[in-house]
Length: 170
Image (cartoon, rainbow, N blue to C red; front, side, top):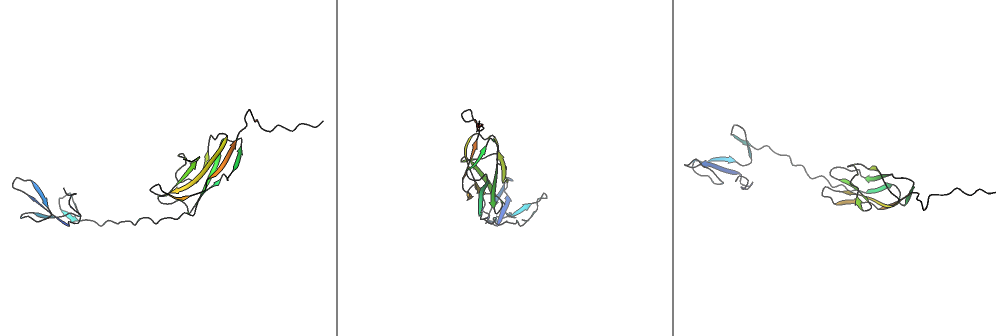
């Protein structure tokens, strides 16, 4: 019932009827005692004025000027590897409630460590990959989106086992 009363009602009145039932009202009744709604009750049962609460202003919005993949470079080719090191540049640096999201082939890399700007992608098979980065705010909205880069992993296969040594001249 106390919650139902408006915070704008600065006072509350409490009294017991003849049957001992406690009643509350925003208007005084004969025999009622005044209660300050915006106060805390001590263990002694006395009411004291509420302590002021500090209200922090919302954090200032950060304007990101850069959030892009710096390694690998666009169209870089990796031969005979299964791991590729990735680095992301974010300016200004990540702060507050902002987070980095890295997309590998259009899907979020959920293994990317929170707050990290680099990591090694493991177990990459032969093929072409896309990679991009963006900064998300507290609500998951992209506030900075970098360009998508492509990189390629090449592995020897039975059909193309690699370069053969040049034939010896007689």
